[in-house]
Amino acid sequence: MSKLQVETMPLEENVRLNITVSRYNLQRLKYWAAISGKTPSAYASQIISARLEANFDLINRQLEDLAQSKGIEMSDLKELLDDQDSK
Image (tube, rainbow, N blue to C red; front, side, top):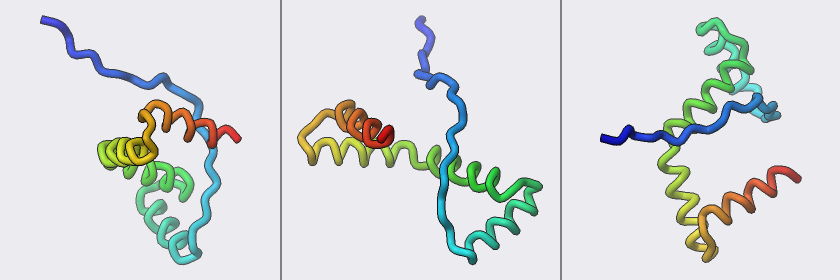
């Protein structure tokens, strides 16, 4: 029997992301982070990562839909989006 091979992403350095939230949401984030013993930035990072992981399949379906609507392959769409990010 062959072993199941799982595609893994190479470990990368963390990337800083500047975001803007309302004062109301920042206050709630501070409370939530404090309860968890984390800084607001660290906790926000965990929240974002968790939501991305939870929506992985949805994100892929949306990418497929967008690529199809543009008449291009998903790999080409990803390349276009990656190029936009580097500008």
